[in-house]
Image (tube, rainbow over all chains, first blue to last red; front, side, top):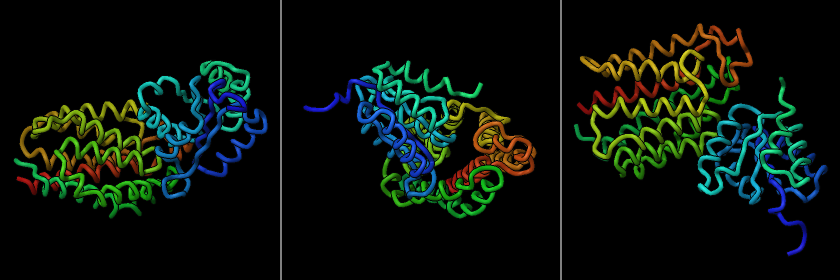
Length: 135
Length: 204
C-alpha cells in the first residue's frame, strides 16, 4: 500500500444541515491538511433538503474511519442529536472511539483537522476544537 | 384485550394518519419558533412507517414499536427523528411480549426518561416532554376513565406550552419571542397520544 496510512491519524467527520456547508468546510480542512487525515462530510435530510440523516452520518463515519478514532463537527441541534444517535448505533467496538466536538463547525473542523494531522489523540483533537467554544 | 396483527396495523395507521394529516399545521407551528421542518420531517418518517405497516404489524407489539422507532431514526432527518425514535425504541425494549395496560406505565416511564437523556431536557422547557411527562403522570395514576383523561391531559399540556419560553432546540435562539406559540413537538406528541387513546377505545 502506498500513501499515508489512513489509521495513522484521527479522522474528521463534518455534519451540516446543508450539503454545501459540509462540502465547503471539508474543502477548507483538506486545503489545510491534504490527505493526511481521513475526512468525510454529509449534509441534508434523507430527501436531500436541509437537515441531517442518521444513515448518512453512519456512512460518513465509516468513510473517515481511523483506528485512532473519529471526531465529529456539527452545526445546529438536529445535527448533534442525529450524530449522537448514529454513534450509539455503531458496532460496540467503535462506539468509544467517536467523539462529538462542541465547537463551531468551520473553525472547529479546521482546528481539529490540523491537530489530527499532527498525530494527536482523539481527546487532544477534541480539546483543540473546543478551545473555540464561546465562553 | 388481545392486540392481534390487525389491531397493531390499525395502531400504526392511526399514528401515521394523524401525523401526516397534521403535517402542515406542525410545519406552521415550527415556522413560528423553529426551522419550519417539523411537519415535513415527521411526515417523511411516518410515510415510511405507513409503507411498512403490514410488515411491522406482523411482529409482536414490542418489536413493532422498536421497528417504528428505527424507521423514524433513519428517515425523519431532524432532531425529532432521534427523539421520537428513542421514544418508540425504548417502548419496544421495555414492553414484555405479552403486554397489557398494566405494562404501559413502566414502559412509558422508561421511554420518557430516554427522551430526556437524548434531548438533555426535561419538562418546563417547551418541548415534547411537556406533553409526555404529564401524560405519564396521568397514566401512573390510573383509575376510572383513564383513556379519556390521557387524551384531555395531552391536549391541555400542549396548549400549556404556548406561554412557555423555549430553552432547548432551535426555538431557544428566539428567547422571549418563542412565547405565545405552541411548541410543535408538544403538539405532535399530543396528536399521537390522542391517536393511541382513540385506538385503545376501539379495542375495548
